[in-house]
Length: 444
Ligand code: PMP
Image 1 (cartoon, rainbow, N blue to C red):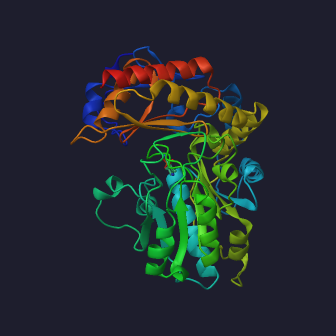
Image 2 (cartoon, rainbow, N blue to C red):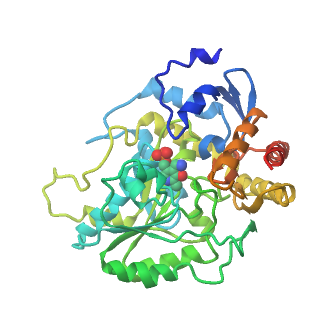
Image 3 (cartoon, protein in one colour):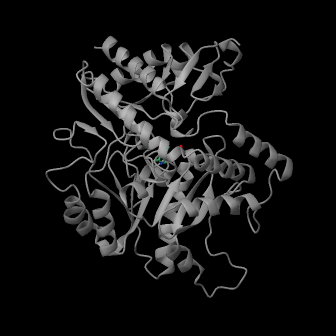
């Protein structure tokens, strides 16, 4: 198929430099296992699980069959004032995987919707407890929480806000970023250690500024994925939990990237041994095959919302989407979670992540412009010195070069990330890291 067959000129691509794309298109037409096939028939190895989604690899028969069966049985039915059997089944499986008393699942269709949903649950919960004044949210610099107005407000990436100017959430603050390039440039399979406590700023500046009794929730990605796989310092998340508990502040982990196996455990919450009050998820929950996201909430949130003396016909939470708990998406989730379990894929993610990290550190360290390498879970990142005056260009050029040479990796500023499907083999890792190394050399 020729590229012109796709170039209707109508498709405005998200988060893509469209003008450049039209000159040098990248269009996928097939996928199988670890590989994508382009419109001009080239095989490309999928080094980022197609946006961190495809944990079990592409074109899994079990998931495809479950979707087909669901379509033939119940294609769709209203999700308001009724539900469907697959939504209950998927919620049960997700709650069983989630740690502690994170037991109540609110479905939506994406990570962005999950974040906005979690922020609204936080506000509604505090209001239901008679603490409606708690309406301040605290995020973190360079955090990515999707593109809803809630997500770009608590998110810490100014580029995602600056084109829009207005209409952010009114009461938001951001903690400093979790990266210390001096002492933690090279991190392999362990937590960074900081000389100073990065959470002192939360305790000494942010909370007194807003008064902690006004703060509704703190939201963080346990590992900052989109920014370039930045790892939390040792003990950071535990201490964050303690600070939140001390002040009655809810803690939200955005697990859209880390959820369902990326850390070698079901969630990053398990990896770090910290139970948040809510976890957002999307992506790997359906192996990327169907759009599905959600929020897992602790029992206390749900129970509080149900405590009402309003008449029986009044709903307790005025929120939801037409496709919340869509039966086809939930069928995909059920089949995906079964597949992960049957093949021990979370454990495999942890094991292959170590192989990936070894390859990053042994192959990339010392190459031109490499100023840091971070690996933990089934993801590794290499940080490059930016070209003066054009931040992000070096990594972007390397990404384009890798694609031409058959490897799909992810640029994030001046970082390149590889986070493969959990089915990855050692030979795939060698190909991915070898291609990346060669491109880094070419762009010295
Ligand atoms: N939160 C995090 C941590 C993410 O990484 C992403 C997507 N990369 C989102 C939210 C938004 O998800 P979506 O693109 O499905 O809206």
